[in-house]
Image (cartoon, rainbow, N blue to C red; front, side):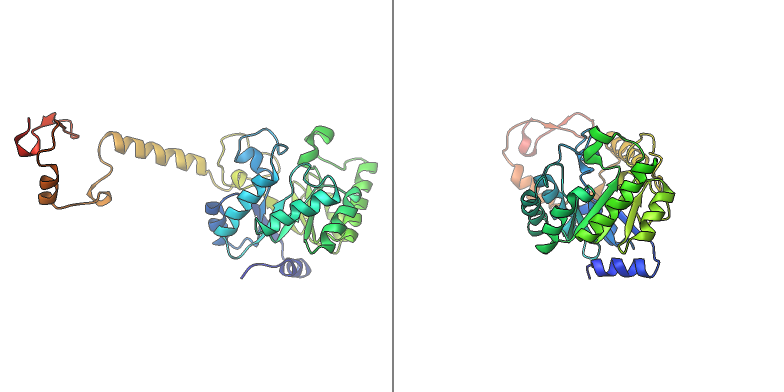
Length: 296
């Protein structure tokens, strides 16, 4: 049974912390479906970790729709939230059209957008149309060229504005809020003032939950681990070792074996190759063998 927004709200009410993970394809969604994680974010972070770009900005609505479809096919239990990418919600009309696509075509249960009080009219428009909206404050990747890649809300004015923005978008109708790269004490203060769940990333344990990027926590890259994450596995190293072992076994002819090879009747093969011209090269390295039917 698919996790509902109401179930996430109950977790908050019962002080059960809420884990959330990104996923971008069928395989990763199938793996998440086997865990206790109740929420998946199909994030525009796919621009960097899947497409190899240097920011989230080039990601399109078509990209998010495509990846959301794949994730939805791979899981039956987690709540799936899809990011509205850069400039896809520049106006309430744009937001309504593109959020509708993420839900109708992609199958998402909710969309997520970045921004504070200025986004309140857009949020209201979506919620009134029946589209659940998750907010995102603090470091907002789509605004990286304006605010820089740094912790947000460290001075009095910025901290106060984050609190006011959180309250404003709550009143506009968001059901949950991501707080990214916000000082832990400020994130905890915001959480205490809201009726909705806060999901942190680089915002401390005072949030109601935590979202992390699939590739970071599983160690799928060999780059330095960002401060706001922890590597819970080193799957890239495991994959490299496995692939090198495969390559070695292919070269030394220990793979594939008869177990991985389909068989057929020798008589059928002999009859099929009768009178077929051409020399036969021995794959065992012993040189050419005579062809069936006496051909040299």
